[in-house]
Every structure is written in C-alpha cells, then in structure tokens.
Length: 115
Image 1 (tube, rainbow, N blue to C red):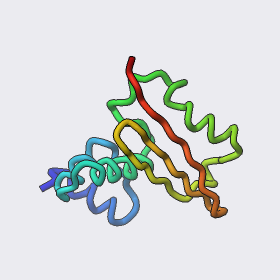
Image 2: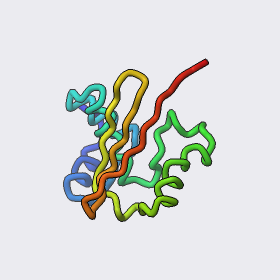
Image 3: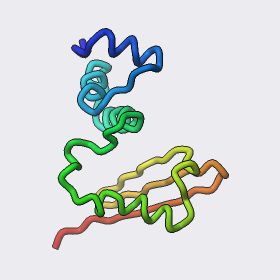
Image 4: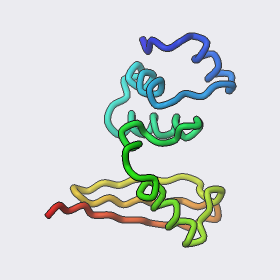
C-alpha cells in the first residue's frame, strides 16, 4: 500500500491534482517500480508540479541546474519544441537524446571523470 491520501489518488485520476517527489516515490514503490523505472516515474510526476527539482539536487547552484536548459535555448530549442527524451548510460558515459516535435533529434553527451 502506498499510504497516500485517497483524496490524492482520486484527484490524480480525475486530473485535478498532481504529486510531488515524495508522494510519487511512495506510489512508485507501491507499484513495485525499481531503478530506472522508478526514477522515470518520479521525474515524470514532478514535471507536472510546481517544484520541478529533485530534493537531492536542490543544493546545487541554480546556474548549474539551468545550464542544459540554457544550452538548448541558445541552440534554438524551446520547451514547447520537446516531444520526449531518452537517457542512455554506458559506464561513465551518458547520452541524452531529445526528440523534437518537428522530427529532429538533438543529442547531449557527457563523460564524468574524477582526477
């Protein structure tokens, strides 16, 4: 059992309520979601609420958190242009594929190394 208020579940079903990270995590765990599926569920849930940053990420500077959005905007990709995205991970490398409504695909890649 997710142990979330029944009124919240009813509001979600009716489209009149959204959930934040904490409630989304509870619901995802109650649905037996794990790893990437749970992360994806939580990220999709918080995309609809007012607090769109994960609790674990809030201590990073705003300039850092907004860096990808700024780069996309500078490349001419606006929020309304986004259709969906996919993150592929391979060891320390990450590839973010951003699918745009006009059929184009933008890619961002990153490699994390600690010296």
